[in-house]
Image (cartoon, rainbow, N blue to C red; front, side, top):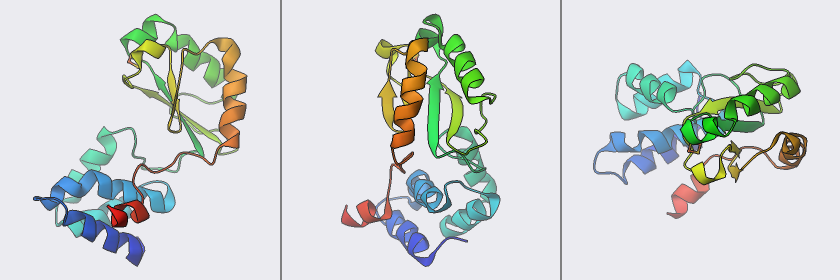
Length: 171
Ligand code: FES
């Protein structure tokens, strides 16, 4: 269940758009920020706030790799696997990260620190092969960089929500 504060923030957000359903993506960010992911109960609740079919919400949640239906790690490693990065070794990078973290692509480490997410182009092709570590663009990445990057990531507070209730109220 979403908190009253989150529900109210989503309803306020809807008022900023001519069509309230246009607020769905930012609303899902706000909802996800509450517990870190969007289980079906939360998706249904958001659908209720928008008076739309829960399947529509689920279609959005499953389309974008910034939304999660299950708990994820404290840190997100989005590794680009698109053309420029692939040509410069992103497959190998994913393989090395999987070995180092002892997980398969899409999985979370047993200590809950990292989730590895192979992604489509992240818009930083000039840094190929690159990844987004939480909200930080990093690249080009060499195998020898991996250990340092993971250690640095661990020092950060984790992946932030791009939209926060406080920011929304100030807007
Ligand atoms: S192809 Fe990797 S960032 Fe564009």
